[in-house]
Image 1 (tube, rainbow, N blue to C red):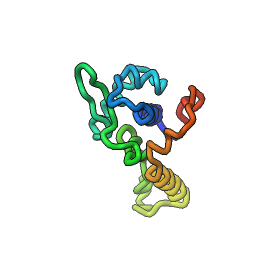
Image 2: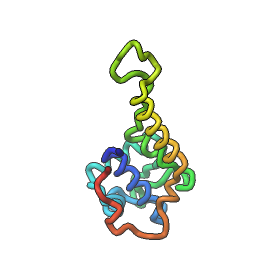
Image 3: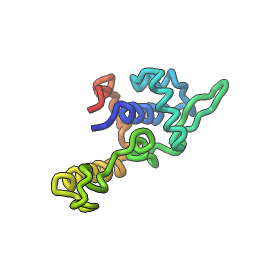
Image 4: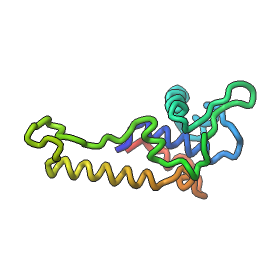
Length: 142
């Protein structure tokens, strides 16, 4: 359901929220989140452009969340790197449907809307929790 990029972005944000230091290097985030460094660099760039992380160069620099984890939602992170796609008109291009979706596409769009609502209601802080994944929750994206 989520792309690899969205999964990696969420892992990176959780890693940033988990550590107490002000800034983490890309290498530290890569280790903590089990994300390949090259891919992580792309993800951090997208998150930075969206204003979700701040990058600081130089000694003691690195990345840090732009806002507290309690104020960052899963939807914001996913939307920054690979937004969920709502169905706004007939994907088949059938003029008879216009902007009215058939029952199939209405159900599919309802499912995406439900995911959006769940992601909007879930903060990054809530994903940190007390338990450490130890690799078990870093499985491939579904």
